[in-house]
Image 1 (cartoon, helix red, strand yellow):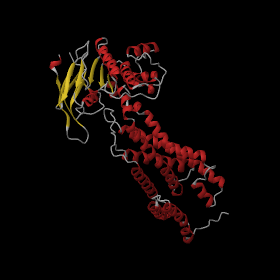
Image 2 (cartoon, one colour):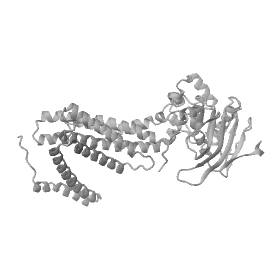
Image 3 (cartoon, rainbow over the protein chains, first blue to last red):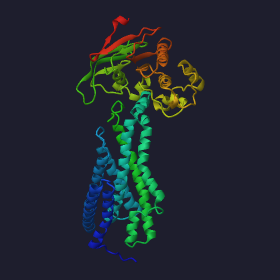
Image 4 (cartoon, rainbow over the protein chains, first blue to last red):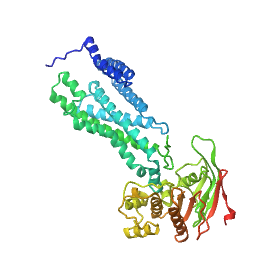
Length: 261
Length: 226
Protein backbone atom coordinates (compact mmCIF):
# COMPACT_ATOMS: atom_id res chain seq x y z
CA UNK A 1 0.00 0.00 0.00
CA UNK A 2 2.86 2.35 0.84
CA UNK A 3 4.49 1.84 -2.52
CA UNK A 4 4.28 4.96 -4.73
CA UNK A 5 3.27 4.25 -8.33
CA UNK A 6 5.26 6.45 -10.68
CA UNK A 7 3.49 8.13 -13.61
CA UNK A 8 5.43 7.51 -16.81
CA UNK A 9 5.78 10.11 -19.57
CA UNK A 10 3.30 8.16 -21.70
CA UNK A 11 0.77 8.08 -18.88
CA UNK A 12 1.30 11.80 -18.30
CA UNK A 13 0.60 12.50 -21.98
CA UNK A 14 -2.51 10.33 -21.73
CA UNK A 15 -3.85 12.86 -19.23
CA UNK A 16 -3.94 15.37 -22.09
CA UNK A 17 -7.20 13.64 -23.10
CA UNK A 18 -8.85 15.90 -20.52
CA UNK A 19 -7.46 18.95 -22.31
CA UNK A 20 -8.72 17.62 -25.65
CA UNK A 21 -12.19 17.33 -24.13
CA UNK A 22 -11.97 20.92 -22.83
CA UNK A 23 -10.70 22.14 -26.22
CA UNK A 24 -13.52 20.32 -28.03
CA UNK A 25 -16.13 21.87 -25.71
CA UNK A 26 -14.72 25.33 -26.36
CA UNK A 27 -14.58 24.69 -30.11
CA UNK A 28 -18.10 23.26 -30.45
CA UNK A 29 -19.79 25.89 -28.32
CA UNK A 30 -17.60 28.83 -29.46
CA UNK A 31 -16.49 29.61 -25.90
CA UNK A 32 -13.39 31.39 -27.16
CA UNK A 33 -11.22 29.58 -24.60
CA UNK A 34 -9.04 27.46 -26.91
CA UNK A 35 -6.07 29.81 -26.76
CA UNK A 36 -6.24 30.15 -22.96
CA UNK A 37 -6.58 26.38 -22.49
CA UNK A 38 -3.50 25.81 -24.68
CA UNK A 39 -1.42 28.43 -22.89
CA UNK A 40 -2.65 27.19 -19.50
CA UNK A 41 -1.68 23.61 -20.35
CA UNK A 42 1.80 24.59 -21.55
CA UNK A 43 2.33 26.73 -18.45
CA UNK A 44 1.14 23.93 -16.15
CA UNK A 45 3.70 21.53 -17.64
CA UNK A 46 6.53 24.09 -17.82
CA UNK A 47 6.03 25.71 -14.42
CA UNK A 48 5.53 22.46 -12.51
CA UNK A 49 8.47 20.69 -14.17
CA UNK A 50 10.62 23.73 -13.42
CA UNK A 51 9.35 23.73 -9.83
CA UNK A 52 10.06 20.00 -9.59
CA UNK A 53 13.69 20.42 -10.65
CA UNK A 54 14.15 23.47 -8.43
CA UNK A 55 12.68 21.63 -5.44
CA UNK A 56 14.83 18.57 -6.09
CA UNK A 57 17.90 20.81 -6.13
CA UNK A 58 16.86 22.73 -3.04
CA UNK A 59 16.02 19.58 -1.07
CA UNK A 60 19.45 18.19 -1.92
CA UNK A 61 21.42 21.33 -1.06
CA UNK A 62 19.23 22.43 1.89
CA UNK A 63 20.47 26.01 1.84
CA UNK A 64 18.45 28.68 3.73
CA UNK A 65 19.33 31.42 1.23
CA UNK A 66 18.00 29.32 -1.65
CA UNK A 67 14.81 28.44 0.23
CA UNK A 68 14.10 32.10 1.01
CA UNK A 69 14.93 33.06 -2.59
CA UNK A 70 12.31 30.62 -3.88
CA UNK A 71 9.86 32.05 -1.36
CA UNK A 72 10.64 35.57 -2.59
CA UNK A 73 10.09 34.54 -6.22
CA UNK A 74 6.70 33.07 -5.27
CA UNK A 75 5.64 36.33 -3.53
CA UNK A 76 6.84 38.49 -6.47
CA UNK A 77 4.97 36.23 -8.93
CA UNK A 78 1.82 36.49 -6.81
CA UNK A 79 2.16 40.27 -6.85
CA UNK A 80 2.35 40.28 -10.65
CA UNK A 81 -0.75 38.09 -10.87
CA UNK A 82 -2.62 40.49 -8.56
CA UNK A 83 -1.41 43.44 -10.66
CA UNK A 84 -2.78 41.73 -13.76
CA UNK A 85 -6.19 41.23 -12.17
CA UNK A 86 -6.64 44.56 -10.38
CA UNK A 87 -6.78 47.20 -13.09
CA UNK A 88 -6.18 50.25 -10.91
CA UNK A 89 -4.20 53.14 -12.32
CA UNK A 90 -4.92 56.03 -9.92
CA UNK A 91 -3.92 54.57 -6.58
CA UNK A 92 -0.36 53.27 -6.05
CA UNK A 93 -1.17 50.03 -4.25
CA UNK A 94 1.64 47.74 -5.47
CA UNK A 95 4.39 48.50 -2.92
CA UNK A 96 2.26 48.42 0.26
CA UNK A 97 0.56 45.25 -1.00
CA UNK A 98 3.86 43.54 -1.80
CA UNK A 99 5.49 44.44 1.53
CA UNK A 100 2.46 43.32 3.52
CA UNK A 101 2.30 40.05 1.59
CA UNK A 102 5.98 39.40 2.19
CA UNK A 103 5.84 40.02 5.94
CA UNK A 104 2.54 38.27 6.65
CA UNK A 105 3.28 35.20 4.50
CA UNK A 106 6.75 34.83 5.95
CA UNK A 107 5.39 35.07 9.50
CA UNK A 108 2.67 32.47 8.76
CA UNK A 109 5.04 30.03 7.04
CA UNK A 110 7.58 30.33 9.88
CA UNK A 111 4.83 29.85 12.48
CA UNK A 112 3.52 26.72 10.77
CA UNK A 113 6.83 25.01 9.96
CA UNK A 114 8.77 26.16 13.02
CA UNK A 115 6.13 26.05 15.75
CA UNK A 116 3.17 23.87 14.76
CA UNK A 117 5.03 21.19 12.79
CA UNK A 118 8.09 21.93 14.95
CA UNK A 119 10.64 21.19 12.28
CA UNK A 120 14.28 22.25 12.75
CA UNK A 121 15.50 24.39 11.09
CA UNK A 122 12.26 26.32 10.46
CA UNK A 123 13.18 26.85 6.81
CA UNK A 124 13.44 23.10 6.10
CA UNK A 125 12.37 23.18 2.43
CA UNK A 126 10.24 20.02 2.54
CA UNK A 127 7.79 21.85 4.87
CA UNK A 128 8.51 25.55 4.44
CA UNK A 129 8.08 25.76 0.65
CA UNK A 130 4.77 23.87 0.40
CA UNK A 131 3.39 25.80 3.40
CA UNK A 132 4.53 29.10 1.86
CA UNK A 133 3.14 28.12 -1.53
CA UNK A 134 -0.29 27.30 -0.14
CA UNK A 135 -0.43 30.53 1.90
CA UNK A 136 0.66 32.66 -1.04
CA UNK A 137 -1.62 30.99 -3.59
CA UNK A 138 -4.68 31.21 -1.38
CA UNK A 139 -4.15 34.75 -0.06
CA UNK A 140 -3.25 36.04 -3.50
CA UNK A 141 -6.78 35.35 -4.75
CA UNK A 142 -8.27 36.84 -1.60
CA UNK A 143 -6.21 40.01 -1.97
CA UNK A 144 -7.13 40.42 -5.63
CA UNK A 145 -10.84 40.11 -4.72
CA UNK A 146 -10.50 42.53 -1.79
CA UNK A 147 -8.55 45.13 -3.75
CA UNK A 148 -10.97 45.02 -6.68
CA UNK A 149 -13.90 45.44 -4.30
CA UNK A 150 -12.21 48.28 -2.40
CA UNK A 151 -11.47 50.34 -5.52
CA UNK A 152 -14.84 49.61 -7.13
CA UNK A 153 -16.84 50.58 -4.02
CA UNK A 154 -14.74 53.67 -3.34
CA UNK A 155 -15.56 54.88 -6.84
CA UNK A 156 -19.23 53.89 -6.82
CA UNK A 157 -19.84 55.27 -3.33
CA UNK A 158 -17.68 58.37 -3.59
CA UNK A 159 -20.63 60.74 -2.95
CA UNK A 160 -21.68 58.75 0.12
CA UNK A 161 -18.12 58.77 1.50
CA UNK A 162 -17.87 62.53 0.87
CA UNK A 163 -21.21 63.07 2.62
CA UNK A 164 -19.82 61.37 5.73
CA UNK A 165 -16.56 63.34 5.47
CA UNK A 166 -18.62 66.54 5.23
CA UNK A 167 -20.37 65.64 8.47
CA UNK A 168 -17.11 65.34 10.40
CA UNK A 169 -16.15 61.73 9.74
CA UNK A 170 -12.46 60.95 9.45
CA UNK A 171 -11.41 58.83 6.46
CA UNK A 172 -11.61 55.62 8.49
CA UNK A 173 -15.15 56.31 9.64
CA UNK A 174 -16.25 57.47 6.19
CA UNK A 175 -15.01 54.29 4.50
CA UNK A 176 -15.69 51.76 7.27
CA UNK A 177 -18.45 49.88 5.40
CA UNK A 178 -16.37 49.72 2.22
CA UNK A 179 -13.37 48.43 4.18
CA UNK A 180 -15.46 45.74 5.91
CA UNK A 181 -17.04 44.58 2.66
CA UNK A 182 -13.69 44.42 0.89
CA UNK A 183 -12.03 42.34 3.62
CA UNK A 184 -14.95 39.93 4.00
CA UNK A 185 -15.28 39.48 0.21
CA UNK A 186 -11.69 38.24 0.18
CA UNK A 187 -12.12 35.99 3.23
CA UNK A 188 -15.40 34.28 2.32
CA UNK A 189 -13.84 31.71 -0.10
CA UNK A 190 -11.41 30.47 2.62
CA UNK A 191 -14.22 30.26 5.17
CA UNK A 192 -16.46 28.43 2.68
CA UNK A 193 -13.60 26.02 2.01
CA UNK A 194 -13.60 25.12 5.74
CA UNK A 195 -17.33 24.34 5.49
CA UNK A 196 -16.94 21.96 2.55
CA UNK A 197 -13.63 20.31 3.33
CA UNK A 198 -13.85 16.56 3.77
CA UNK A 199 -17.49 16.53 2.67
CA UNK A 200 -17.59 18.18 -0.72
CA UNK A 201 -13.94 17.92 -1.65
CA UNK A 202 -10.67 16.39 -0.54
CA UNK A 203 -8.01 19.09 -0.60
CA UNK A 204 -5.03 18.77 -2.92
CA UNK A 205 -2.39 18.52 -0.24
CA UNK A 206 -4.19 15.78 1.66
CA UNK A 207 -4.92 13.89 -1.56
CA UNK A 208 -1.24 14.16 -2.47
CA UNK A 209 -0.11 12.81 0.89
CA UNK A 210 -2.56 9.90 0.73
CA UNK A 211 -1.53 9.10 -2.84
CA UNK A 212 2.08 9.17 -1.67
CA UNK A 213 1.29 6.60 1.00
CA UNK A 214 0.81 8.67 4.16
CA UNK A 215 -1.64 7.40 6.80
CA UNK A 216 -4.93 9.34 6.18
CA UNK A 217 -5.13 10.14 9.92
CA UNK A 218 -1.78 11.95 9.71
CA UNK A 219 -2.76 13.56 6.41
CA UNK A 220 -5.92 15.04 7.92
CA UNK A 221 -3.95 16.60 10.77
CA UNK A 222 -1.74 18.37 8.25
CA UNK A 223 -4.79 19.38 6.29
CA UNK A 224 -6.47 20.88 9.38
CA UNK A 225 -3.34 22.92 10.07
CA UNK A 226 -3.35 24.05 6.43
CA UNK A 227 -7.01 25.09 6.46
CA UNK A 228 -6.57 27.11 9.67
CA UNK A 229 -3.34 28.60 8.36
CA UNK A 230 -5.06 29.70 5.15
CA UNK A 231 -7.93 31.43 6.97
CA UNK A 232 -5.53 33.14 9.37
CA UNK A 233 -3.06 34.29 6.74
CA UNK A 234 -5.87 35.50 4.48
CA UNK A 235 -7.37 37.51 7.34
CA UNK A 236 -4.06 39.06 8.37
CA UNK A 237 -2.92 39.93 4.85
CA UNK A 238 -6.36 41.19 3.72
CA UNK A 239 -6.84 43.42 6.77
CA UNK A 240 -3.29 44.79 6.61
CA UNK A 241 -3.35 45.44 2.85
CA UNK A 242 -6.80 47.06 3.02
CA UNK A 243 -5.67 49.32 5.89
CA UNK A 244 -2.63 50.53 3.95
CA UNK A 245 -4.29 50.80 0.55
CA UNK A 246 -7.43 52.47 1.90
CA UNK A 247 -5.28 55.29 3.30
CA UNK A 248 -3.82 55.76 -0.16
CA UNK A 249 -7.33 56.30 -1.58
CA UNK A 250 -7.43 59.56 0.42
CA UNK A 251 -5.22 62.62 0.09
CA UNK A 252 -3.54 64.68 2.79
CA UNK A 253 -6.82 66.52 3.45
CA UNK A 254 -8.61 63.16 3.72
CA UNK A 255 -10.27 63.90 0.37
CA UNK A 256 -11.22 61.00 -1.92
CA UNK A 257 -8.60 60.70 -4.65
CA UNK A 258 -10.42 58.22 -6.87
CA UNK A 259 -12.33 59.72 -9.75
CA UNK A 260 -14.89 57.90 -11.93
CA UNK A 261 -13.27 56.02 -14.80
CA UNK B 1 -11.74 91.51 13.50
CA UNK B 2 -10.51 88.23 12.02
CA UNK B 3 -12.76 87.21 9.14
CA UNK B 4 -14.49 83.86 9.39
CA UNK B 5 -13.10 82.85 6.01
CA UNK B 6 -10.43 84.34 3.85
CA UNK B 7 -9.38 83.03 0.46
CA UNK B 8 -6.08 84.36 -0.83
CA UNK B 9 -4.77 83.97 -4.38
CA UNK B 10 -6.48 80.62 -4.84
CA UNK B 11 -5.52 78.68 -7.97
CA UNK B 12 -7.02 75.42 -9.05
CA UNK B 13 -6.94 73.13 -12.08
CA UNK B 14 -8.45 69.67 -12.38
CA UNK B 15 -6.03 66.75 -12.34
CA UNK B 16 -4.54 66.14 -15.76
CA UNK B 17 -5.71 69.53 -17.06
CA UNK B 18 -3.53 72.58 -17.57
CA UNK B 19 -6.50 74.96 -17.74
CA UNK B 20 -6.98 76.88 -14.50
CA UNK B 21 -10.49 76.95 -13.07
CA UNK B 22 -9.44 79.64 -10.56
CA UNK B 23 -6.56 82.01 -11.00
CA UNK B 24 -5.54 83.98 -7.90
CA UNK B 25 -9.11 84.14 -6.59
CA UNK B 26 -9.64 86.29 -3.47
CA UNK B 27 -12.64 86.68 -1.19
CA UNK B 28 -13.32 87.45 2.46
CA UNK B 29 -16.37 86.27 4.40
CA UNK B 30 -17.35 87.80 7.74
CA UNK B 31 -19.34 85.99 10.40
CA UNK B 32 -23.10 86.22 9.83
CA UNK B 33 -22.86 87.01 6.13
CA UNK B 34 -25.05 85.39 3.52
CA UNK B 35 -23.04 84.89 0.36
CA UNK B 36 -24.59 83.93 -2.95
CA UNK B 37 -22.24 82.73 -5.67
CA UNK B 38 -23.70 82.74 -9.16
CA UNK B 39 -22.22 81.72 -12.44
CA UNK B 40 -22.75 79.52 -15.46
CA UNK B 41 -22.45 75.72 -15.31
CA UNK B 42 -18.85 74.58 -15.35
CA UNK B 43 -17.49 77.85 -13.93
CA UNK B 44 -16.30 75.99 -10.82
CA UNK B 45 -18.96 77.02 -8.28
CA UNK B 46 -19.14 73.60 -6.65
CA UNK B 47 -15.36 73.25 -6.77
CA UNK B 48 -15.00 76.48 -4.80
CA UNK B 49 -17.12 75.08 -1.96
CA UNK B 50 -15.28 71.76 -2.10
CA UNK B 51 -11.94 73.56 -1.79
CA UNK B 52 -13.14 75.42 1.31
CA UNK B 53 -13.85 72.12 3.12
CA UNK B 54 -10.82 70.33 1.62
CA UNK B 55 -12.75 67.87 -0.54
CA UNK B 56 -10.48 69.13 -3.32
CA UNK B 57 -6.92 70.35 -3.11
CA UNK B 58 -5.82 73.68 -4.61
CA UNK B 59 -2.65 74.12 -6.67
CA UNK B 60 -1.83 77.46 -5.11
CA UNK B 61 -2.91 80.12 -2.63
CA UNK B 62 -4.38 79.65 0.81
CA UNK B 63 -7.70 79.43 2.60
CA UNK B 64 -7.88 80.71 6.16
CA UNK B 65 -10.65 79.78 8.56
CA UNK B 66 -10.80 82.04 11.65
CA UNK B 67 -7.27 83.11 10.74
CA UNK B 68 -5.81 79.60 10.53
CA UNK B 69 -4.76 77.95 7.29
CA UNK B 70 -7.22 75.11 6.72
CA UNK B 71 -4.34 72.73 5.97
CA UNK B 72 -3.25 73.17 9.60
CA UNK B 73 -6.66 72.05 10.91
CA UNK B 74 -7.41 68.30 11.12
CA UNK B 75 -9.79 67.55 8.22
CA UNK B 76 -12.52 66.06 10.44
CA UNK B 77 -12.29 69.03 12.82
CA UNK B 78 -12.56 71.49 9.93
CA UNK B 79 -15.55 69.70 8.41
CA UNK B 80 -17.38 69.60 11.73
CA UNK B 81 -17.41 73.41 11.74
CA UNK B 82 -17.49 74.02 7.97
CA UNK B 83 -20.31 71.82 6.76
CA UNK B 84 -20.85 71.11 3.08
CA UNK B 85 -24.16 69.90 1.64
CA UNK B 86 -23.82 68.41 -1.84
CA UNK B 87 -26.06 69.15 -4.79
CA UNK B 88 -27.51 65.62 -4.77
CA UNK B 89 -28.46 64.78 -1.17
CA UNK B 90 -26.99 61.51 0.05
CA UNK B 91 -28.72 59.30 2.61
CA UNK B 92 -27.64 56.02 4.15
CA UNK B 93 -30.07 53.10 3.87
CA UNK B 94 -31.55 53.64 7.33
CA UNK B 95 -34.31 55.54 9.12
CA UNK B 96 -34.69 59.32 9.10
CA UNK B 97 -33.54 59.40 12.74
CA UNK B 98 -30.41 57.34 12.05
CA UNK B 99 -29.56 59.62 9.15
CA UNK B 100 -30.04 62.73 11.24
CA UNK B 101 -27.95 61.42 14.14
CA UNK B 102 -25.17 60.07 11.91
CA UNK B 103 -22.79 63.00 12.60
CA UNK B 104 -22.83 62.05 16.29
CA UNK B 105 -21.49 58.58 15.49
CA UNK B 106 -18.22 60.17 14.37
CA UNK B 107 -15.47 60.69 16.95
CA UNK B 108 -15.20 64.45 16.36
CA UNK B 109 -18.87 65.01 17.30
CA UNK B 110 -19.09 62.40 20.06
CA UNK B 111 -18.94 64.96 22.88
CA UNK B 112 -21.58 67.23 21.33
CA UNK B 113 -25.08 66.99 22.86
CA UNK B 114 -27.35 64.71 20.83
CA UNK B 115 -30.76 66.15 20.08
CA UNK B 116 -33.69 64.23 21.53
CA UNK B 117 -36.74 63.04 19.60
CA UNK B 118 -38.77 66.12 20.56
CA UNK B 119 -36.08 68.44 19.31
CA UNK B 120 -35.82 66.49 16.04
CA UNK B 121 -39.60 66.62 15.55
CA UNK B 122 -39.54 70.37 16.12
CA UNK B 123 -36.74 70.82 13.61
CA UNK B 124 -38.50 68.63 11.04
CA UNK B 125 -41.49 70.95 11.28
CA UNK B 126 -39.29 74.01 10.79
CA UNK B 127 -37.83 72.37 7.69
CA UNK B 128 -41.32 71.77 6.25
CA UNK B 129 -40.95 68.06 7.00
CA UNK B 130 -43.77 67.79 9.55
CA UNK B 131 -45.26 64.82 7.70
CA UNK B 132 -42.00 62.84 7.92
CA UNK B 133 -41.64 60.40 10.83
CA UNK B 134 -38.33 59.60 12.49
CA UNK B 135 -38.69 55.84 12.00
CA UNK B 136 -39.43 55.85 8.29
CA UNK B 137 -36.84 54.98 5.69
CA UNK B 138 -34.88 58.00 4.47
CA UNK B 139 -34.37 56.32 1.11
CA UNK B 140 -38.09 56.56 0.36
CA UNK B 141 -38.28 60.36 0.73
CA UNK B 142 -38.61 62.60 -2.31
CA UNK B 143 -35.53 64.44 -3.54
CA UNK B 144 -36.90 67.71 -2.12
CA UNK B 145 -37.44 66.12 1.30
CA UNK B 146 -33.98 64.56 1.20
CA UNK B 147 -32.42 67.94 0.40
CA UNK B 148 -34.10 69.59 3.40
CA UNK B 149 -33.16 66.63 5.60
CA UNK B 150 -29.52 66.90 4.41
CA UNK B 151 -29.40 70.61 5.35
CA UNK B 152 -30.99 69.83 8.72
CA UNK B 153 -28.48 67.04 9.36
CA UNK B 154 -25.57 69.33 8.57
CA UNK B 155 -26.92 71.92 11.01
CA UNK B 156 -27.27 69.45 13.87
CA UNK B 157 -23.51 69.47 14.42
CA UNK B 158 -23.71 73.28 14.87
CA UNK B 159 -21.31 74.35 12.10
CA UNK B 160 -19.96 77.90 12.01
CA UNK B 161 -20.14 78.00 8.22
CA UNK B 162 -22.64 76.23 6.00
CA UNK B 163 -21.75 75.56 2.36
CA UNK B 164 -24.75 74.76 0.17
CA UNK B 165 -24.04 73.45 -3.31
CA UNK B 166 -26.92 74.19 -5.71
CA UNK B 167 -29.45 73.24 -3.01
CA UNK B 168 -32.48 73.76 -5.27
CA UNK B 169 -31.21 72.56 -8.65
CA UNK B 170 -32.90 69.16 -8.47
CA UNK B 171 -36.09 70.44 -6.84
CA UNK B 172 -39.52 71.49 -8.07
CA UNK B 173 -40.70 75.08 -7.54
CA UNK B 174 -42.46 74.34 -4.26
CA UNK B 175 -39.54 72.50 -2.69
CA UNK B 176 -37.10 75.13 -3.96
CA UNK B 177 -39.14 77.90 -2.27
CA UNK B 178 -39.05 75.96 0.99
CA UNK B 179 -35.27 75.61 0.81
CA UNK B 180 -34.83 79.32 0.00
CA UNK B 181 -37.05 80.19 2.93
CA UNK B 182 -35.00 77.89 5.22
CA UNK B 183 -31.75 79.54 4.08
CA UNK B 184 -33.13 82.99 4.83
CA UNK B 185 -34.29 81.95 8.29
CA UNK B 186 -30.95 80.31 9.08
CA UNK B 187 -29.22 83.60 8.37
CA UNK B 188 -31.69 86.02 9.96
CA UNK B 189 -32.93 84.01 12.97
CA UNK B 190 -29.99 81.72 13.71
CA UNK B 191 -27.21 84.11 12.53
CA UNK B 192 -25.65 81.32 10.49
CA UNK B 193 -22.98 82.21 7.95
CA UNK B 194 -23.93 80.72 4.59
CA UNK B 195 -22.26 80.40 1.24
CA UNK B 196 -24.70 79.15 -1.37
CA UNK B 197 -23.85 78.53 -4.98
CA UNK B 198 -26.73 78.64 -7.40
CA UNK B 199 -27.46 79.41 -10.99
CA UNK B 200 -31.07 80.28 -10.15
CA UNK B 201 -32.08 83.92 -9.74
CA UNK B 202 -32.88 83.95 -6.04
CA UNK B 203 -34.24 87.17 -4.52
CA UNK B 204 -34.55 86.76 -0.75
CA UNK B 205 -37.24 88.82 1.00
CA UNK B 206 -35.83 89.29 4.48
CA UNK B 207 -32.11 89.39 3.89
CA UNK B 208 -29.73 91.05 1.42
CA UNK B 209 -27.07 88.57 0.45
CA UNK B 210 -23.67 89.55 -0.89
CA UNK B 211 -23.84 88.28 -4.44
CA UNK B 212 -20.74 87.29 -6.35
CA UNK B 213 -20.43 86.11 -9.91
CA UNK B 214 -17.86 83.50 -10.75
CA UNK B 215 -16.41 84.35 -14.12
CA UNK B 216 -13.01 84.59 -15.77
CA UNK B 217 -11.51 82.29 -13.13
CA UNK B 218 -12.29 84.70 -10.30
CA UNK B 219 -15.10 86.07 -8.09
CA UNK B 220 -16.66 89.46 -8.81
CA UNK B 221 -18.94 91.26 -6.35
CA UNK B 222 -22.22 92.36 -7.95
CA UNK B 223 -22.41 95.93 -6.66
CA UNK B 224 -25.76 96.51 -8.42
CA UNK B 225 -27.46 93.95 -6.19
CA UNK B 226 -26.79 96.00 -3.06
